[in-house]
Image (cartoon, rainbow, N blue to C red; front, side):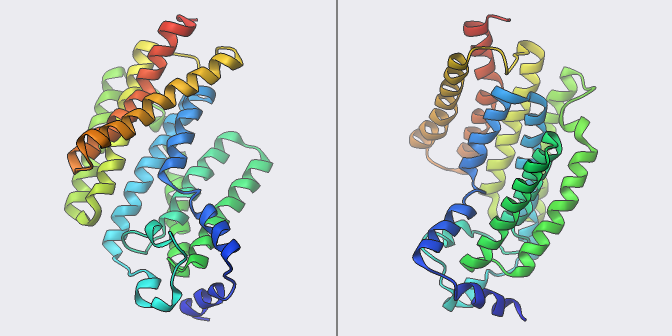
Length: 294
C-alpha cells in the first residue's frame, strides 16, 4: 500500500466530530502548550528537569526546522489537493514535510519526561500520546507516513543523545561563567548553522534560539543569585506564584508584539525576554517578596 493510499484511507474516516478531535490531538504539540508546561515544571516541580526539558524543546524544534529545510519535501495536500485538510489543519503544516515535527518533538519531550518520572502509567500515557499525535497528522492529510516514521527515528536518536548528555544540559559541574557562556554561545552557533545551511524559515529559528537563550541565561542567574525552592509555600501561595509568572510571561508575549510587531529582531528579543522572565525574574520576585529566602 502506497503512502497516498494510506492517506486516502484516513480521509475516508473523516467526520466533523473526528476532525475536531484530531485537531485537538495535533495541537497538543503547539507553542502554547510548551509555554504553559515548561514554566510550571520549573516553578512547581523540578528545576533541573525543567532545564533539561527546555533544551530538548528549543533545540529539538531548531533541529527539526533545519532538517525540513535540508530535505525540502512537499506536503501531501499540496501535491494532492483532493486530501483537502480540515479547517485550521494547513496552518499547523508550515515548511517542509520530512521529518514530521509533530512526530519528532513530542517523542523527545515526552520521552525525556518519562525518563525523569519513571512511572509505568506515565510511560504508557506518553507513548499513546506520541502515537496519536503522529496519527493525527496522517488523518489531517498534512504528512506522509514516511514523514511520521522519519520523525520518530530522528526523535529517538535525539532523545538518546539528550539523555546521555543530561549533566551538561542541567548545568552540572559548570561554573556560573561557563553556564552563561554556553547560554549565549550555543544559541548563536545554532542560529549561524540555520542561516548557513537552512535559511528557509529563519523566523521560527529565531523564536527557538531567542527562547532558549533567555531560558538558559535565566537558569544560570537563578542558580547563582536566587536559588529558589519550587516546592516551598502553601497551596494558595503556589497558585499566586503561577498566576504572577504567567502574567509576566504572557504580558511580554502579547505586549511586545502589540508594541513592536513581529519582525525577526523583535521576535528574537521577545522570546528571549519571555524565557528570562520565567527562569529568573519570577523566581527573584518570589524569593524576595514571598518566601524571603526560606
